[in-house]
Image 1 (cartoon, rainbow, N blue to C red):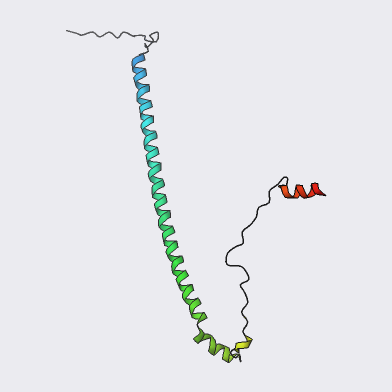
Image 2: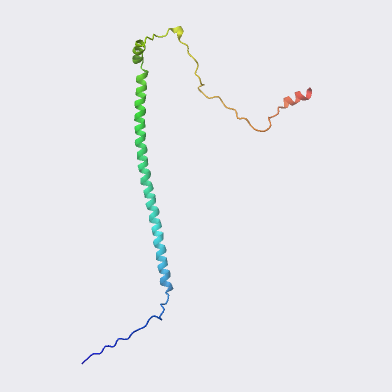
Length: 140
């Protein structure tokens, strides 16, 4: 028994695929949901990155503050050492200076007042008119 196979050429070029609107709508919904999830993830990641960045910046600022406080303390100690009379008097004697007599010391007032003077702000326009001045002008 011999088997015979026949090959038939099928031409599907004239067939058109029918659009499935439900499937298209479902794919569009999935894409939009995926984009929404991606945006939420990116927003959370950006916030997390910003928090980490600000944390590092705060630590750097704290470190710098501690260094400045330490430098300030060192400068205060150096200033106190330089103002020490025990150090100044021998240096002055080496330079040939003598202590001032009581009648040679003059105390000057501070160059600037302790409290600032109250300031007056000028107003534009007409000056206020005093009613007493008007009476005086009318009597003349």
